[in-house]
Image 1 (cartoon, rainbow, N blue to C red):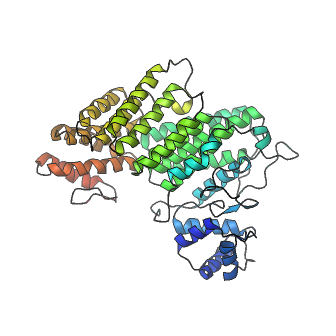
Image 2: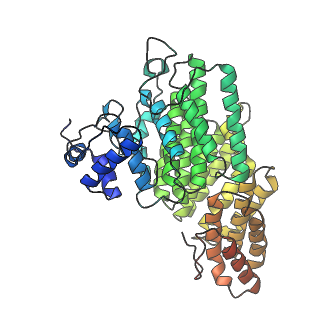
Image 3: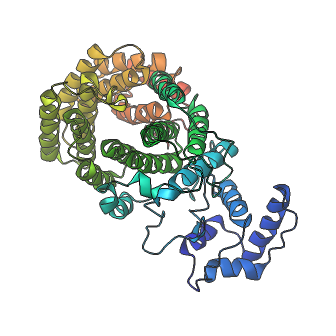
Length: 491
């Protein structure tokens, strides 16, 4: 007993809206359903967990995690509840317990993916599913990202170097792997990544999460260092992909958690650029959700912690995300300066060092696509930027390779939106209809979010017969969120 309140558990308890007696009864009922009928939790025990920081014995933390996950509509782990694997999480951590200790990352990864697979939360994300603030993540991880862990000292030690860490959570029956298995895992990442780019994150998300769960089990063994690093790399790549797919279908707190897990995994594998790229995904998510200042906080962390080995092309990508956040705030001068830096970095990359697999999708088409999005966003504050947005988005369209359907939809929407701002409804109508042709075949909710933003811009042209028809087609095609009759997007 610490005799200090467990603030994390208290916060989640408040969000859940239970009484202490009600939670005690739910714990007993849930524990029995999970095969532990002997539990007899009461109100006073729940009070001690919250008010004095008492850590309940197994299996209560797992039962509580399951209950809060069901109640809040998002994955809640034992760590989120303020319970460490062997006691409370140490003081001085952030609200999310960041950064994780090196010997806990595989367990956190496996626990989180296991809970994600167990519960179907689609459509259940509510007010209780709050994102961590970008500044909180940045402050917690500032020094951590700049240091490289020593795998030889940080990894769990046992008498048998291939022995399973028994501290894991519902870990599947893993086994040590060799080079051939790691190659197969690396190839699977490429397959999942290509599918995501083509069809969006909805259809393969749980397959990626399941694969990541298995890799977490593999990481509980101590492999030779070269294999261990590659496994951490696979875990980082899968976690980023799981996060991006979750973001793509609107599971925002889940997505953020995967991005943070990915940053940890990449750092464990000694790949600081990958860790920073994972954090940059958090930043893109923040801009999408209308929190640009928090995105800038995260990008400052990502850029400062990336290390000297980060390729110019990767730094160029970072700049485009930073510029998008600046555009959302209407900071035109900063946007032009940051995008100028992105262009310089991109052309300075001589290509003598092959880009990592996770950077291969950021090519010249993506650079123009991001510039189109940035200037289209800035055009809301500086309408003259709409012409520049159209030029870049059209360049992106001309360069897009096959298999990038989602990006192509985004380009069409960027052009159409910029045309509406530029008082060119005829051309806007043409590109908006191009987006509609393929958007129904894509599982990306973000494409619909961007379409809602474009729909808002059509309001001033509602008297135009062609645009009136377009608005009706969008309204009929829109998923359940739909659009408001007044012309604004419903969210």
